Image (cartoon, rainbow, N blue to C red):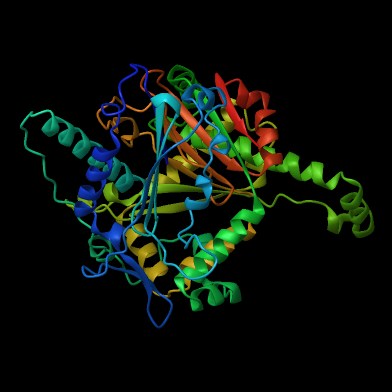
Length: 473
């Protein structure tokens, strides 16, 4: 995640996010999050786990450097990370050692980049998803910022007491809900983990370090583009009301239902058009002419995976204090007749939003318990599902982080100017983020293939909702 801070007040070096204060605060924050200094281990059947060795801590990577760019230059580029002297994408998304041989998986990478003449600061933070999710991550960042502010006050002889919190890191808080049955699960979810996969078996056999390197190599070969779109709160609410008018009486669609429906349609149609473009090229066209109908591209349906926070859906008072990974994806398969060129009208969007609403609402404690049992009864199941998803071209993984306190991360110099994900290791991912409080609204981030990104920008229906965008091809 990238937190951008502009030094609009022209504060001095020792007052605008001072390096010594930030570093000291970071290492004090690890005391509350000991898993960040853990080792990734694997048992005899390939199941990975985290181990904190007090006598041999696996300390995260932390650096604070300067660059020759002014903050205004990176702002004018649309905050394009490729303009920076450091390849941050290499440290984001896939837990793997940075070197080709040797080394150990680090649980966190922190890169602080200071722009020329103290014009601004980028705080880049990447923490492994195996030990923390977006909810826990924002709590970590806000705790780091809180300790930074406290240290600055102490340095200024202002005596205050640092608030303390009791964070939970024991996975048994949700493992206890696993139910020894799968009756509530849909057939698609069952199929994704029950199908045998030699590749999944191979990946579970190798060490966590080798596994991470392989995933990183695959992600670098695939390549993708990042597009960022801002939608005002009023535009989104107006659309929600128009779509709501077609919903059954007594059903209230949320902004989340409608915006996930919108991005599902725009990506599905963009993928379909990109596929048609590919088949129209000379070599694919020649193959299609030989194969006839067998060579025709087909759209059997579209898969949208909605990330859901389990904490509010299980009967556990302490769940909100759990800082580990407690999110899972609800798979929703839309038939072809629901997504077509007419899907952008309000009535068609309502049908999609209703399906999303129903699936999300049906994700109760029983469903979560059965899914947890299914995924954890075999160490290959997570990898089986990963590779099953990888084979599906017509898919989108979505995560709504609007309620996460990204813009509360104030290290003492004010809230961030902008918060965005770094380019993700894998494509076909969309985030719905809060926009800056200065502007309000929502920011939608797409990590997709370059040809798909071009068709998203070329969608008139989508761009009518957008008031500004950045495209990093």
